[in-house]
Image 1 (cartoon, helix red, strand yellow):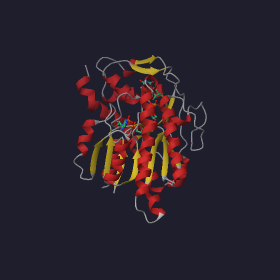
Image 2 (cartoon, protein in one colour; image 1 turned 90 degrees about the vertical axis):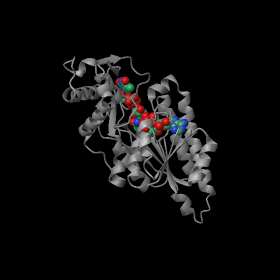
Image 3 (cartoon, helix red, strand yellow; image 1 turned 60 degrees about the vertical axis):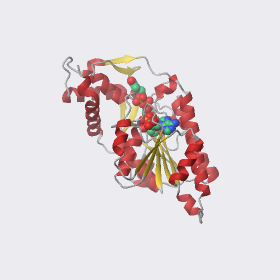
Image 4 (spheres, rainbow, N blue to C red; image 1 turned 45 degrees about the horizontal axis):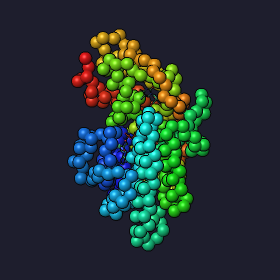
Length: 339
Ligand code: NAD
Ligand code: TDX
């Protein structure tokens, strides 16, 4: 019996697999290896005996059915997705295909495999679990006040968030209709090691150390709630182990920053640990550029259900984790790119 992780070559999936492998759990990592995959990092995982990599597409339903039977999958952590909002604005179709249809095919493969297993008791079927990793963006945008929680109304604004919202609804329906043991998590913005360079924090670091303009959309006043990826991964394990079937959890960092505030914070850290040879501060590179279409103003999570049910809460180690992240990116491309 093995645990299926989809999208395990991506940012969060890779962090998650590293966490689980250390515990001796056997993981099957199913990833299509799109542009977002961390191929070099994946190779290091091959040294674990309890790890199997399968390259494949969640849009391929026959292939998914084979995987469920071949590895007798009874636990699923579903990360695989197209994840970048800007890409969804330029080309939404692959978001519909991967995030909606891909999730549907995966649910179907799980349902068919689990229903065909010769379980003597319904409780054995109920032990098979499908955890769907989703986002706070399904709830749309907040004004200056308030927080998203499990009770918030779905109001997605981008093709990305609409595709994630749709996938959440399909997962929900599989619990209500087929009694499948599903759980949905909606997390705020993650940061940390292995994040694709298209995302905001890697963009700021890369631009700064290359002495390029640091692009800030609009006036930089948009707010995100940042959570260190390893804390998100721990939260997912807790939810998987302890949540009730059909439940949903909001996960957040309790750590709101406007984009301009965060960019300046990163620049200040870089000024200390890797001062520019040309500028008195990297902040001089900050440039306001055209805003993202339909740019959500503010995301913030009330994660009190996670605390109440499981005692989980985010740490207050943002600065320490941001420094760790910056150092990792400097090692990744700092020395060779600094002019
Ligand atoms: P990512 O873009 O870094 O990685 C996605 C992975 O999925 C990649 O390895 C890619 O190769 C794989 N993939 C894409 N299409 C596939 C397909 N058709 N078949 C198989 N694999 C495919 O994404 P991420 O930031 O690690 O996000 C992981 C999940 O977490 C996503 O579902 C995302 O919506 C959700 N999420 C992300 C954040 C965040 O801040 N990054 C926050 C909340 C929720
Ligand atoms: O160059 C940039 N300049 C800029 O100002 C980029 C790439 C982003 N931004 C802004 C847009 C957002 O307000 O920074 C903020 C964060 O942007 P992203 O890193 O693209 O993240 P976001 O759009 O908030 O979505 C992320 O969090 C929720 C993930 O990409 C999603 O997958 C997740 O669901």
